[in-house]
Length: 215
Image (cartoon, rainbow, N blue to C red; front, side, top):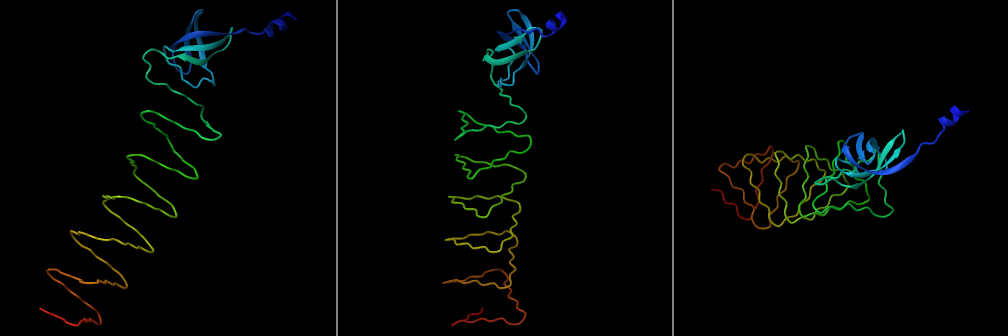
């Protein structure tokens, strides 16, 4: 009976302030009673660093856990909040992440944004990637100026419609158009000029006008 009583004897648990002297998966703490080896509690999201003052709970002849980081070490430049492998942040209405200088989102695999509406507002926006895929039913753009520099542009369209006030194009080498029907219409003057101009037809060449000048 005495052996059974000793086996179920409850262990004492107490809290104490401590200083982190060694950081990692296992922490070494300096307390008023000596050094203690502890682990970070699941509720302590801020990762303790060397020199931090922490609150720990110690079980006599048992485990020790760091509950919270009370003060950062002098000269600490960065705070790390570490979450479990799968984490969900849920807000009933709205979640805001704000920083005075910048926000970095880094993912080793995929970074996904799923929403009914996505809005990006910035003075300067830049997208960089080896492959960029855009899929949608309707794309609308209201731009003041567009500048495009590309080595190759390939497009497959069922219909292309453009309406411009002035159009200028400079082709250094070859400009080739292949079409079943080709129709050019000018309200005033249609001017074709070249060092050599060749018009070739298989069956018929027709020139019609009130006046025709050749030479």
